[in-house]
Image (cartoon, rainbow, N blue to C red; front, side, top):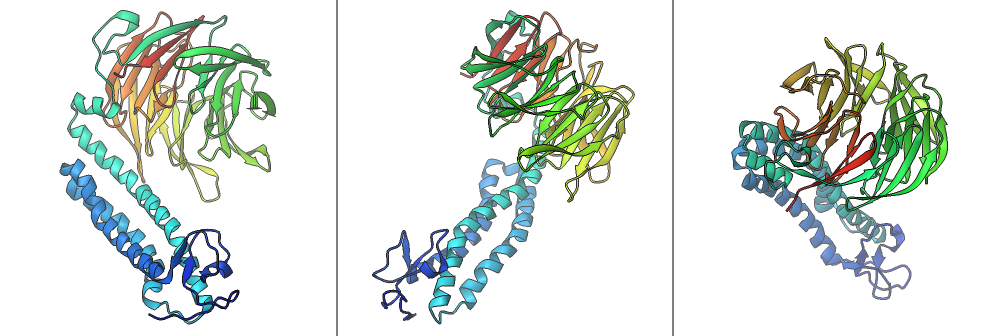
Length: 482
């Protein structure tokens, strides 16, 4: 293939293409006099084009067999799901690669520049292709793995997944089962703790007592108080901390939500007319959802550098307690004093609409998503844990686990689901129960008995530490990994 196109700047024959990102179209073609970052010869350009196309074919053939080697028993189902997903995505590859490979002809400078531009986009497109493939496969793969582990409930598999080392059975420090989380220290406090939250890295802990907010440095299980924040006139009972920036929300019995940035109050929401029970940020952190004793759920959007209320949902007829978003932020679940659980779905107009309403014989304060379409609900008397699955046409109850002790909590503490360890943490009276893989099967890993039922609990994102904030002290537990 002989291409003789001259460089418009040096009048020399073009011998290279620059395929780096963010290069002007006119600088894609290079002669011997031109300077480029990472120039690629014309021969290499066409070789790379062919190699890219072949790589996509190899990915299609190789991907299923990597998974088959790990889970041979799932081979037939897994191959079917993967091929189905790849087939839909492969259309996009053919639309991009085939015209370049089969129909592109070099007739002049502009065509060479366009070729360089298209080759530059292939690398980033390949990354987007793989991300989309994973996104398409993840829900199906979760369901397949659920079925596999439910049919093979050996504890060894559970321990391998958790990377936990089995401890000795003991009564020390209140542990009544195998010691996965072991008490390592205590820190005295003056007033009862009402809420706890960590930042993403786990080196900052925020707690509340009465109308005060305390900021703590947390390093390797050691707490050091840094500052005290005061803006609320009532008890601060709910917290929500950003995973990306240095801001958080606090909710109070004074019916106000305060926005904090760099430990300073920068905003205040007064629209609710009752205690703020729960605050949840979406993944983009450009939206926050709140629930209140006034029976409403409010959606707040960050627009033009300020938070504004974009929607109010009043489908519940009583106080709304815990709310929870699924991983994809497409579903929201809420539980209320009116004996109902409502599943909400977001539409293209970014408004939430009721998808299902579940009536119960008793009310519940705790609800939490554990997978994209599965959530856990706990009745207020705390005598059971129930798992539900959200289908396209109906809401299905998958399983229920009865708990030994009945009775309402002295202090409300929401359910915690830790995705890193795949553990659900439930506070029940004076006991903390940790449940592994809370989907269609429920496996209690550990129970910790405490002296009173007035406490809050929280776990770091990595699941290495569990914190209990009680009447007059914090108790810190560390994951027992050896």
